[in-house]
Length: 141
Image 1 (cartoon, rainbow, N blue to C red):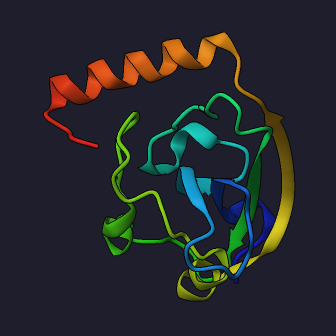
Image 2: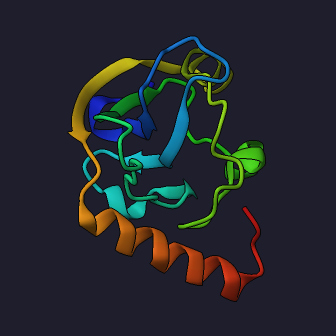
């Protein structure tokens, strides 16, 4: 039996989370196999992508969800379709949180938080940095 102290967590960060929408969630970060509070010991599936709302788009809502892994350790390779490096747009759209919960045996969120971000001048510098990174890595949009 897995005790609370031994519980593994999955953390997902999405833009405008809708739990059961196939193409409504844009993944910004995913880490699995987090042992309790030791976030740095988890397995990163999708590296963190900063919020970058465009000019005139209004506020974007980003939701952070932590869910318990009821089946224990997740083999990261089963999520290969979600692997993404920071600044890479690959494999980030169309995340269905409910389907992910079912597939991995995740609980309902045990913790959640959100932030709202509107376009600010710093967004342009993030986008420029990512554009440079993509060119260096040979990634096209």
